[in-house]
Image 1 (cartoon, rainbow, N blue to C red):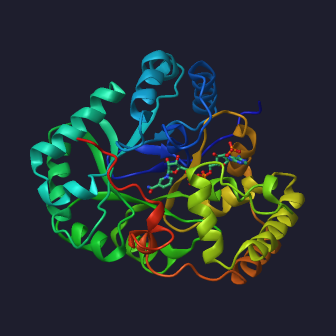
Image 2 (cartoon, rainbow, N blue to C red; image 1 turned 90 degrees about the horizontal axis):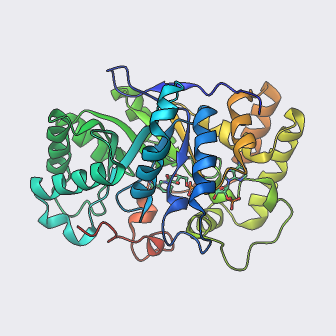
Length: 353
Ligand SMILES: NC(=O)c1ccc[n+]([C@@H]2O[C@H](COP(=O)([O-])OP(=O)(O)OC[C@H]3O[C@@H](n4cnc5c(N)ncnc54)[C@H](OP(=O)(O)O)[C@@H]3O)[C@@H](O)[C@H]2O)c1
């Protein structure tokens, strides 16, 4: 395979950086899909991704079995990859259960962080991305401070956030929590971060790490000129199917895919490369997550790193996305509504500590 250079993005100001294309771990969790993953094949694919420059892995305390799996990968391949000059960075999340939010204390936060360290078999977590299900329950600033104390104690290198809106992100930053990032959905279909989050990130100089860039695989050739799947193949597809409805539905989405195909033809790449490049080019985006449970998409993923849009491409992207309805609200606002079509898909009690 041709060696592609994947850019690196600094996070924080201590010299730490991550790869601009990040291996997403949710797809490897128990319950994400029916298929059984052969771990030897998976590890071989992950090692190829790391050697190709996708050295950063994203997981979470609530992705069942994934921290353990990445831990086994690091135990088997971490040292040899490091010796080859390809050290792996681990980004995990701290997502306290909805039912536990009012009962958190520093000890319970530390227990979860210690569990992540132990599952991953590392002495320090490169990035812990903090989440909070319900702003109506006070305590997120305090919990973020406890994470900062665990950082001072050497267990965490950087503290970030995930799915926080601009108001609460600003509140934590103003309280002195040194957040380096917010992981949010940001894609051709979902431009919610542009309203408030990007300007805030500019002001406070934190980065965005984005998911949903491929809309769970919907922003790819395999769905071009296809009817909607009767049954979503996995949890990502369920999540992004409702985003497609939000922007106007299947026909509108198909018109976007056609436009992406036109651009992809100009560069002789798959649609997925165009969708990933679009996300990589967004303001303040330091890394784009690509969900995977095998290595079959590696080449088209890597093609995004060398793709450069022309003025004509950008004009067509503007035109194609202008015909989509805006997803309303700030980041994750729809998903917080537990009665709505987005929020009903969320599993709010997976941490189990
Ligand atoms: N913080 C949060 O709330 C949150 C939420 C969602 C995700 N995430 C993170 O983001 C990661 C990505 O998840 P996502 O849900 O946004 O999924 P995604 O990356 O938008 O889509 C992943 C799916 O797209 C397909 N795919 C991947 N690379 C491709 C390529 N080059 N060409 C064509 N198809 C490709 C694969 O499906 P097939 O293999 O079936 O083709 C894969 O399962 C997760 O693993 C997780 O780390 C975070």
